[in-house]
Image 1 (cartoon, rainbow, N blue to C red):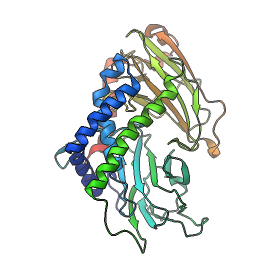
Image 2 (image 1 turned 120 degrees about the horizontal axis):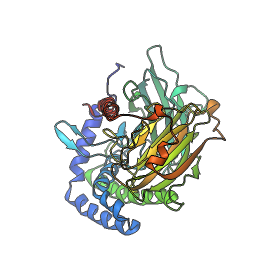
Image 3 (image 1 turned 120 degrees about the vertical axis):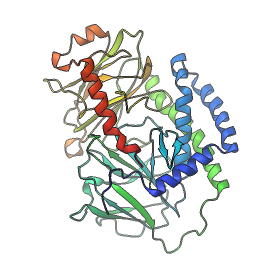
Image 4 (image 1 turned 30 degrees about the horizontal axis):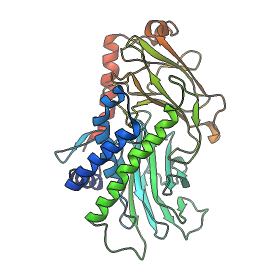
Length: 414
């Protein structure tokens, strides 16, 4: 396979997004969207702040449900990228599809499969080694029932590889994932820590079963699945965020370390929600990685989408952050620019969710001493805790954000 600048921009992806955009505006789906809008607002009963960002987030989550729901035919699977920001495909504006407390560093792709069919996934490894690159096989409830790490894939000298997927082959052969009853889809995450230079793996799939259904899902089946996914997306987002909202404000003690409900094996999540009483206040965070190669602090709203991530610091990973001499990382989350490098910008919102993530532990053993310490302070007081090396000028901020936007831009190239 030949390397390309944007492995996301496949013909299948373009055709899929154009079909999704068409169905998103189908009359039956438009009516259903209004039903889900009322259902979700009644379910959440949001604050005024969270209500202010609902419309934009709602459209993304609902379009994300269409993107995912349309790729559910295991006889005719495609490799489809989900959770993208708004962009243009074939001169048609395509809505964003972020959903599920997305990680801005991750390129997420899904492939539907069935345990009674056989497949081969072909690909080409990116030039970098990912801290996170997992081919996770899920069941209907997002529970991990099969897994292969991209870092353990055997490839030729050019990085090309093949992964066999079936229920009949030996379990212990290289580049093989054994399926079982309940196998539903692959959820593939390539985590891009260096936005400018890292690229996800090139991927394609072929159904090589001797016996597969001849007929693809028709429009009626597609509409039915999409409607189910729209409601499921709203319900699951509310349930996931409640894990953070049920805890005290500005505190990060709720820990997830599991491989169920969409969480990733050998990754630790610490969830919490912030609430800033004024634009002069901030949340000061001190983070210890405890040997993890990867860390990210992403801000999401209660609807499960990140805010502005391309032109603002809506997230920062450890590669993008400045480290303290002590080996910890300090962040200031505030509505106003505090004049420090590690500023987490909530896009003007005084409330939101933080899902702090650690991964890439030595020998895949989760560190026991990782932590986050949080304090609600006035910005001027929080800065007193930081060394001058953490300070940044207006010009330096402009350069930081310029580099950020440029390094993200390849993800929405055609």
